[in-house]
Length: 379
Image (cartoon, helix red, strand yellow):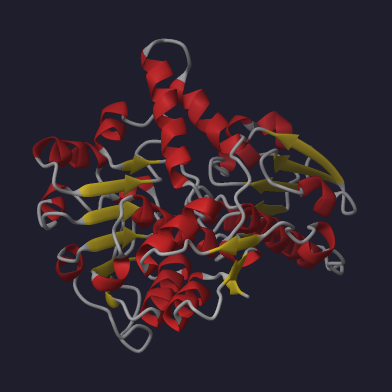
């Protein structure tokens, strides 16, 4: 069988070559001719999977190695008896670590702030759990959850009144609670002075035109955008105004992408009624040279900031995107192509759990517990 896959899916050949012939293509360039003789298609979030792509093909399985499914025409797939699978939660930890790294970059200690979360599924739910373990005062908006599921549920207005608001909603345009343009100028104007707004979910959940208007009027709010409206042709004027910007890579840790590959491999094996004989533990070696040390004579917050930047220097993501914008404005590079290239060639980022932090007896136990909740291993 032929398996057509996005070339950016890590270890795609290693996982799937025993099942069939693996052919890779750039995800945004997949067309009907590519899939006509394929039995399975494996994608990431940039490929729209619909009748235009799959009509008239022999495809019986579609796997997206991402948590989101808004790029899949689910109704058409179901009507045409094409099984599809996603990888819910595969990159949740990666996105949570992006939030921590962004706040460290902005020098905003979340532990003494009111923290609002919009969307408490796999990603927002994990962030909420971690923050609660750190004793953070949390406020959550998710109309699809009940108070039995989340004791911190409240109104959108109450969340927007927080010091930090982190958005992790999928993109929906129908149903009782559509998320498309959930945040417009009216909602943005409710943000308090000095607030931090992060969007690591889907770009169109925030009306980006309204966000630009808002930031042109107020410079007292810090905005962090990993997702944009639209991608890859984002507003460079908006990029100029945000405090930190990145090319939709919050969930792009190496570990998160690998987990997505493994989950879709397992889903295809189940579809084909065969045993899944491979796992990440077989294919990915343990990280070496992974010992870290806390800075001497610093406050706990300064130690945490210094530790996280060693593992994830998020300022580099921002710089690469702004450098691309500079070249695009000078006519030296196509921004949309460069945006995709930044994602395709994103540097390997390993998650916190791959590292061991050395804490001696003179350092506080509080720091040790804080690091454990963040995901680090303690020596």
